[in-house]
Length: 419
Image (cartoon, rainbow, N blue to C red):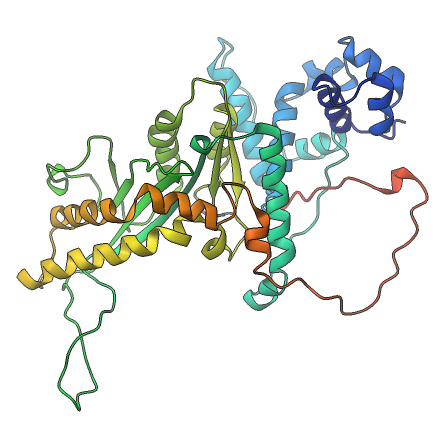
């Protein structure tokens, strides 16, 4: 039985075709693959998996696409669950039927399909994910951030992203009618100071996205309501802004997908064939099968930030959201001077437009990507500020007797998904 996997063979084929090796023999040796196997595959010989493709749920090409998605998400610190893997496979299959005249009535992918898929790609394995409390997570910050930058570096080496193809998206929330704390003058001796706020408190969420070139994409604002009302939208609102609603004012799976398909994709679509890089946190509304499948189809590479690191790794958090909230607080204070009972949504939106224009400055956005170590890519910018873990005891590693002892293994599970 071969000691190499189909995935390793795919890597070898790509390496040779990219002229990374001067001969087939050298390439085969580097990947520990028989010379005859690699030579025959380069002559378009059908692979073992390809010969059984008609019996598979997904084609070999579709499975390779799924495999790459699993590997990229795992490398960036966000291994996906078995259920999400199956959902993603369903989305990939569904996209094929959308483009063909084949009837769309077909049985769902079974739970056992995952086992068959894993056997076809032995570099994958399943393990149980373990939950970490905050203090333990902080103790492993350096290796986790280092692994994140390793994944990011691999993508940069593979795709050479220009600055106008690198983006960061996140959502931020606002309680309608509240402001940040500010210094005030009071009589000497007074100790209790209160600030009047609007009597009606409700939540508004903004999905915002910025690019490493200093650009700002239109936002998606989500209000607490059943239906969108044009009365909330002032005349000064840019035409490409989007508005939506939810029962709570919070974002959801559908809002994330709406933003991706109606704002991000058309606004960043490229004509030069370059792939796009989208950095985001691990919020459940992002990592749905539909969201990931759309990105795979539209050549959008996803990188998920490690948990509890957005304050140093996410450009929006590093240098944009704080100035935005300060500027918005200033505008809301002006409205309070006129009427503290309630702030109409249209006036809040006007205040947000003004505050956003002050906070989303190209120079500040570029600086935020630089400070996050993302563009220009500079892992040392962040890693130099973190304490490297110190070994607690001396451990003698077991001797490596053969190259096969160096297994390539991947995690294929994750913390529970968001809803």
